[in-house]
Length: 336
Figure (cartoon, helix red, strand yellow):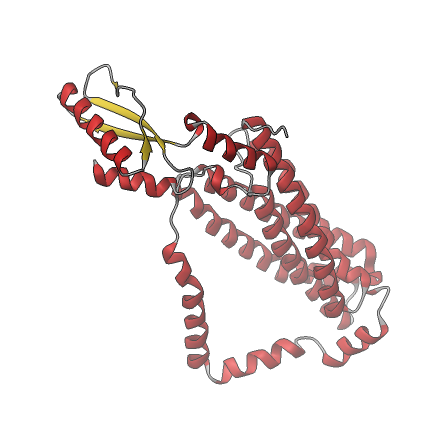
Protein backbone atom coordinates (compact mmCIF):
# COMPACT_ATOMS: atom_id res chain seq x y z
CA UNK A 1 0.00 0.00 0.00
CA UNK A 2 1.35 3.41 -1.00
CA UNK A 3 0.36 6.60 0.86
CA UNK A 4 1.58 10.15 0.53
CA UNK A 5 1.90 12.94 3.04
CA UNK A 6 3.30 16.43 3.02
CA UNK A 7 2.30 20.07 3.04
CA UNK A 8 0.57 19.92 -0.35
CA UNK A 9 -1.23 16.67 0.48
CA UNK A 10 -2.40 18.00 3.84
CA UNK A 11 -3.65 21.23 2.27
CA UNK A 12 -5.53 19.30 -0.40
CA UNK A 13 -7.05 16.99 2.21
CA UNK A 14 -8.11 19.89 4.42
CA UNK A 15 -9.68 21.72 1.48
CA UNK A 16 -11.61 18.58 0.49
CA UNK A 17 -12.77 18.15 4.09
CA UNK A 18 -13.92 21.77 4.30
CA UNK A 19 -15.82 21.34 1.04
CA UNK A 20 -17.53 18.20 2.36
CA UNK A 21 -18.46 19.98 5.61
CA UNK A 22 -19.89 22.94 3.71
CA UNK A 23 -21.92 20.66 1.45
CA UNK A 24 -23.19 18.72 4.47
CA UNK A 25 -24.10 21.93 6.31
CA UNK A 26 -25.94 23.25 3.25
CA UNK A 27 -27.85 20.00 2.84
CA UNK A 28 -28.99 20.20 6.47
CA UNK A 29 -29.35 23.91 7.20
CA UNK A 30 -31.10 25.05 4.01
CA UNK A 31 -34.05 22.60 4.10
CA UNK A 32 -34.49 22.97 7.86
CA UNK A 33 -34.40 26.78 7.67
CA UNK A 34 -36.79 26.81 4.73
CA UNK A 35 -39.18 24.46 6.55
CA UNK A 36 -39.23 26.66 9.66
CA UNK A 37 -39.90 29.75 7.56
CA UNK A 38 -42.70 27.95 5.74
CA UNK A 39 -44.37 27.33 9.07
CA UNK A 40 -43.80 30.95 10.09
CA UNK A 41 -45.11 32.56 6.88
CA UNK A 42 -47.33 29.93 5.31
CA UNK A 43 -46.16 31.00 1.82
CA UNK A 44 -43.33 29.71 -0.39
CA UNK A 45 -42.01 33.04 -1.71
CA UNK A 46 -41.94 34.71 1.72
CA UNK A 47 -40.12 31.69 3.15
CA UNK A 48 -37.61 31.57 0.30
CA UNK A 49 -36.52 35.22 0.36
CA UNK A 50 -34.59 35.04 3.69
CA UNK A 51 -32.89 31.81 2.63
CA UNK A 52 -31.84 33.30 -0.71
CA UNK A 53 -30.45 36.43 0.94
CA UNK A 54 -28.56 34.37 3.54
CA UNK A 55 -26.90 31.97 1.09
CA UNK A 56 -25.98 34.74 -1.36
CA UNK A 57 -24.47 36.71 1.53
CA UNK A 58 -22.30 33.70 2.38
CA UNK A 59 -21.15 33.24 -1.23
CA UNK A 60 -20.42 36.96 -1.66
CA UNK A 61 -18.52 37.16 1.63
CA UNK A 62 -16.34 34.18 0.67
CA UNK A 63 -15.64 35.85 -2.66
CA UNK A 64 -14.57 39.06 -0.92
CA UNK A 65 -12.42 37.10 1.53
CA UNK A 66 -10.48 35.33 -1.24
CA UNK A 67 -8.20 38.31 -2.08
CA UNK A 68 -8.13 39.46 1.55
CA UNK A 69 -6.81 36.02 2.55
CA UNK A 70 -3.46 37.08 1.04
CA UNK A 71 -3.15 39.43 4.02
CA UNK A 72 -5.16 37.39 6.57
CA UNK A 73 -4.52 33.72 5.73
CA UNK A 74 -7.25 31.14 6.25
CA UNK A 75 -6.44 28.27 8.61
CA UNK A 76 -9.17 26.12 7.06
CA UNK A 77 -12.11 27.15 9.26
CA UNK A 78 -13.24 30.48 7.81
CA UNK A 79 -15.70 29.02 5.29
CA UNK A 80 -17.48 26.99 7.96
CA UNK A 81 -17.83 29.93 10.33
CA UNK A 82 -18.94 32.26 7.52
CA UNK A 83 -21.65 29.76 6.56
CA UNK A 84 -22.96 29.49 10.13
CA UNK A 85 -22.94 33.22 10.86
CA UNK A 86 -24.12 34.17 7.37
CA UNK A 87 -27.15 31.89 7.53
CA UNK A 88 -28.03 33.20 10.99
CA UNK A 89 -27.76 36.93 10.35
CA UNK A 90 -29.02 36.74 6.76
CA UNK A 91 -32.25 35.05 7.78
CA UNK A 92 -32.59 37.21 10.89
CA UNK A 93 -32.20 40.54 9.09
CA UNK A 94 -34.55 39.48 6.30
CA UNK A 95 -37.18 38.56 8.87
CA UNK A 96 -36.91 42.01 10.47
CA UNK A 97 -37.67 43.69 7.19
CA UNK A 98 -40.08 41.21 5.65
CA UNK A 99 -42.21 40.86 8.77
CA UNK A 100 -42.66 44.63 9.13
CA UNK A 101 -43.44 45.08 5.43
CA UNK A 102 -46.16 42.40 5.59
CA UNK A 103 -47.63 43.96 8.73
CA UNK A 104 -47.94 47.34 7.04
CA UNK A 105 -49.55 45.82 3.93
CA UNK A 106 -52.02 44.00 6.17
CA UNK A 107 -53.00 47.42 7.56
CA UNK A 108 -53.90 48.60 4.07
CA UNK A 109 -50.67 50.34 3.05
CA UNK A 110 -49.46 50.12 -0.51
CA UNK A 111 -46.37 48.04 -1.25
CA UNK A 112 -44.09 51.08 -1.66
CA UNK A 113 -45.40 52.75 1.52
CA UNK A 114 -44.98 49.51 3.46
CA UNK A 115 -41.39 49.18 2.24
CA UNK A 116 -40.58 52.77 3.20
CA UNK A 117 -41.99 52.28 6.70
CA UNK A 118 -40.04 49.04 7.07
CA UNK A 119 -36.87 50.83 5.94
CA UNK A 120 -37.36 53.56 8.56
CA UNK A 121 -37.93 51.08 11.40
CA UNK A 122 -36.66 47.57 10.77
CA UNK A 123 -33.92 48.88 8.46
CA UNK A 124 -32.52 50.91 11.33
CA UNK A 125 -32.66 47.87 13.61
CA UNK A 126 -30.73 45.85 11.02
CA UNK A 127 -27.97 48.47 10.86
CA UNK A 128 -27.65 48.70 14.65
CA UNK A 129 -27.71 44.93 15.08
CA UNK A 130 -25.18 44.36 12.30
CA UNK A 131 -22.82 47.00 13.68
CA UNK A 132 -23.04 45.42 17.16
CA UNK A 133 -22.20 41.98 15.76
CA UNK A 134 -19.25 43.34 13.77
CA UNK A 135 -17.86 45.15 16.82
CA UNK A 136 -18.24 41.99 18.90
CA UNK A 137 -16.46 39.85 16.30
CA UNK A 138 -13.63 42.38 16.00
CA UNK A 139 -12.68 41.42 19.56
CA UNK A 140 -11.06 38.31 18.08
CA UNK A 141 -8.32 40.56 16.66
CA UNK A 142 -7.14 41.21 20.23
CA UNK A 143 -5.89 37.62 20.50
CA UNK A 144 -3.16 38.27 17.95
CA UNK A 145 -3.54 34.72 16.61
CA UNK A 146 -3.72 34.21 12.85
CA UNK A 147 -6.62 31.75 13.17
CA UNK A 148 -8.76 34.21 15.14
CA UNK A 149 -7.81 37.08 12.83
CA UNK A 150 -9.11 35.08 9.88
CA UNK A 151 -12.33 34.15 11.69
CA UNK A 152 -12.92 37.78 12.66
CA UNK A 153 -12.33 38.99 9.11
CA UNK A 154 -14.66 36.42 7.55
CA UNK A 155 -17.38 37.00 10.15
CA UNK A 156 -17.30 40.78 9.76
CA UNK A 157 -17.44 40.47 5.98
CA UNK A 158 -20.50 38.20 5.96
CA UNK A 159 -22.37 40.38 8.46
CA UNK A 160 -21.55 43.51 6.44
CA UNK A 161 -22.75 41.85 3.23
CA UNK A 162 -25.95 40.67 4.94
CA UNK A 163 -26.67 44.20 6.24
CA UNK A 164 -26.08 45.77 2.83
CA UNK A 165 -28.24 43.12 1.14
CA UNK A 166 -31.05 43.67 3.64
CA UNK A 167 -31.03 47.41 2.94
CA UNK A 168 -30.74 47.23 -0.86
CA UNK A 169 -31.52 43.89 -2.50
CA UNK A 170 -34.33 42.91 -0.13
CA UNK A 171 -36.41 46.12 -0.58
CA UNK A 172 -35.93 45.87 -4.34
CA UNK A 173 -37.18 42.28 -4.33
CA UNK A 174 -40.20 43.19 -2.20
CA UNK A 175 -41.05 46.14 -4.47
CA UNK A 176 -40.82 43.93 -7.52
CA UNK A 177 -42.85 41.07 -6.06
CA UNK A 178 -45.49 43.22 -4.41
CA UNK A 179 -48.32 41.14 -2.95
CA UNK A 180 -47.00 38.07 -4.79
CA UNK A 181 -44.63 37.69 -1.83
CA UNK A 182 -47.48 35.85 -0.08
CA UNK A 183 -47.85 33.33 -2.91
CA UNK A 184 -48.21 30.46 -3.36
CA UNK A 185 -49.88 29.87 -0.01
CA UNK A 186 -50.01 26.65 1.95
CA UNK A 187 -53.71 26.58 2.94
CA UNK A 188 -53.40 24.95 6.38
CA UNK A 189 -50.35 26.93 7.49
CA UNK A 190 -51.71 30.18 6.05
CA UNK A 191 -54.98 29.87 7.97
CA UNK A 192 -53.11 28.89 11.13
CA UNK A 193 -50.88 31.97 10.87
CA UNK A 194 -53.86 34.25 10.28
CA UNK A 195 -55.66 32.77 13.28
CA UNK A 196 -52.66 33.14 15.61
CA UNK A 197 -52.05 36.71 14.43
CA UNK A 198 -48.93 38.85 14.53
CA UNK A 199 -46.86 38.25 17.65
CA UNK A 200 -49.25 35.60 18.95
CA UNK A 201 -46.56 33.12 20.01
CA UNK A 202 -43.99 35.69 21.09
CA UNK A 203 -46.65 37.51 23.10
CA UNK A 204 -47.39 34.39 25.11
CA UNK A 205 -43.69 33.97 25.84
CA UNK A 206 -43.16 37.60 26.82
CA UNK A 207 -46.13 37.94 29.21
CA UNK A 208 -44.52 35.97 32.08
CA UNK A 209 -41.33 37.98 31.64
CA UNK A 210 -43.24 41.26 31.92
CA UNK A 211 -45.14 40.06 34.99
CA UNK A 212 -41.99 38.97 36.86
CA UNK A 213 -39.02 40.81 35.33
CA UNK A 214 -36.58 40.25 38.22
CA UNK A 215 -37.18 36.51 38.37
CA UNK A 216 -36.95 36.26 34.60
CA UNK A 217 -33.71 38.26 34.52
CA UNK A 218 -32.21 36.06 37.26
CA UNK A 219 -33.15 32.84 35.45
CA UNK A 220 -31.90 34.09 32.08
CA UNK A 221 -28.69 35.47 33.58
CA UNK A 222 -28.02 32.23 35.45
CA UNK A 223 -28.56 30.23 32.27
CA UNK A 224 -26.12 32.46 30.35
CA UNK A 225 -23.49 32.13 33.08
CA UNK A 226 -23.91 28.35 33.11
CA UNK A 227 -23.46 28.22 29.34
CA UNK A 228 -20.32 30.37 29.61
CA UNK A 229 -18.63 28.21 32.28
CA UNK A 230 -16.92 25.89 29.75
CA UNK A 231 -15.14 28.94 28.32
CA UNK A 232 -13.13 29.22 31.56
CA UNK A 233 -11.27 26.04 30.62
CA UNK A 234 -10.43 27.15 27.10
CA UNK A 235 -6.78 27.62 26.19
CA UNK A 236 -4.90 28.33 22.99
CA UNK A 237 -2.15 26.01 21.78
CA UNK A 238 -0.05 25.44 18.72
CA UNK A 239 -1.93 23.60 16.00
CA UNK A 240 -0.36 20.30 14.93
CA UNK A 241 -1.28 17.43 12.67
CA UNK A 242 -3.05 15.82 15.65
CA UNK A 243 -5.58 18.67 15.75
CA UNK A 244 -6.64 18.04 12.14
CA UNK A 245 -9.54 15.73 11.23
CA UNK A 246 -8.19 12.22 11.68
CA UNK A 247 -10.15 10.72 8.79
CA UNK A 248 -8.06 12.59 6.19
CA UNK A 249 -5.75 10.02 4.49
CA UNK A 250 -2.82 12.47 4.32
CA UNK A 251 -3.07 13.06 8.08
CA UNK A 252 -2.97 9.33 8.79
CA UNK A 253 0.02 8.91 6.48
CA UNK A 254 1.84 11.82 8.11
CA UNK A 255 1.29 10.36 11.57
CA UNK A 256 2.74 7.02 10.43
CA UNK A 257 5.73 8.90 9.03
CA UNK A 258 6.22 10.62 12.38
CA UNK A 259 6.26 7.27 14.14
CA UNK A 260 8.82 5.82 11.73
CA UNK A 261 10.98 8.91 11.20
CA UNK A 262 11.63 10.90 14.42
CA UNK A 263 12.88 13.91 12.46
CA UNK A 264 9.32 14.43 11.19
CA UNK A 265 7.91 14.74 14.70
CA UNK A 266 6.94 18.10 16.23
CA UNK A 267 9.89 20.12 17.48
CA UNK A 268 10.26 21.95 20.78
CA UNK A 269 12.59 24.96 20.97
CA UNK A 270 14.26 25.63 24.32
CA UNK A 271 15.61 29.20 24.48
CA UNK A 272 18.07 30.46 27.09
CA UNK A 273 19.34 34.02 27.47
CA UNK A 274 22.68 34.28 29.25
CA UNK A 275 25.86 36.38 29.18
CA UNK A 276 27.96 33.19 29.40
CA UNK A 277 27.60 31.15 26.16
CA UNK A 278 29.46 28.11 27.49
CA UNK A 279 27.31 27.96 30.64
CA UNK A 280 24.15 28.34 28.54
CA UNK A 281 25.20 25.50 26.22
CA UNK A 282 25.96 23.26 29.19
CA UNK A 283 22.61 24.06 30.79
CA UNK A 284 20.72 23.30 27.59
CA UNK A 285 22.56 19.98 27.21
CA UNK A 286 21.47 19.09 30.74
CA UNK A 287 17.88 19.99 29.84
CA UNK A 288 18.11 17.71 26.81
CA UNK A 289 19.47 14.82 28.88
CA UNK A 290 16.75 15.24 31.50
CA UNK A 291 14.06 15.44 28.78
CA UNK A 292 15.31 12.24 27.14
CA UNK A 293 15.43 10.42 30.49
CA UNK A 294 11.87 11.57 31.25
CA UNK A 295 10.67 10.28 27.88
CA UNK A 296 9.61 13.75 26.73
CA UNK A 297 12.08 14.27 23.87
CA UNK A 298 14.42 12.29 21.66
CA UNK A 299 18.20 12.63 21.77
CA UNK A 300 19.26 15.08 19.07
CA UNK A 301 23.04 14.94 19.29
CA UNK A 302 23.11 18.56 18.13
CA UNK A 303 24.70 21.54 19.82
CA UNK A 304 22.55 24.60 20.63
CA UNK A 305 22.51 27.44 18.12
CA UNK A 306 23.99 30.68 19.48
CA UNK A 307 23.12 34.20 18.36
CA UNK A 308 25.78 36.55 16.98
CA UNK A 309 26.08 38.44 20.27
CA UNK A 310 26.45 35.15 22.19
CA UNK A 311 23.67 35.96 24.64
CA UNK A 312 20.84 33.78 23.26
CA UNK A 313 21.06 30.03 22.77
CA UNK A 314 18.40 27.80 21.21
CA UNK A 315 18.21 24.00 21.46
CA UNK A 316 15.75 22.24 19.15
CA UNK A 317 14.34 18.93 20.43
CA UNK A 318 12.10 16.41 18.73
CA UNK A 319 9.09 15.35 20.81
CA UNK A 320 9.09 11.70 21.84
CA UNK A 321 5.34 11.56 21.27
CA UNK A 322 3.32 13.18 18.50
CA UNK A 323 0.40 13.94 20.81
CA UNK A 324 0.27 16.50 23.58
CA UNK A 325 2.87 18.91 22.20
CA UNK A 326 1.74 21.65 24.57
CA UNK A 327 2.17 19.33 27.56
CA UNK A 328 5.61 18.27 26.31
CA UNK A 329 6.70 21.91 26.10
CA UNK A 330 5.39 22.61 29.61
CA UNK A 331 7.21 19.57 30.99
CA UNK A 332 10.50 20.66 29.41
CA UNK A 333 9.97 24.18 30.78
CA UNK A 334 9.68 22.69 34.27
CA UNK A 335 12.92 20.76 33.79
CA UNK A 336 14.62 23.92 32.58
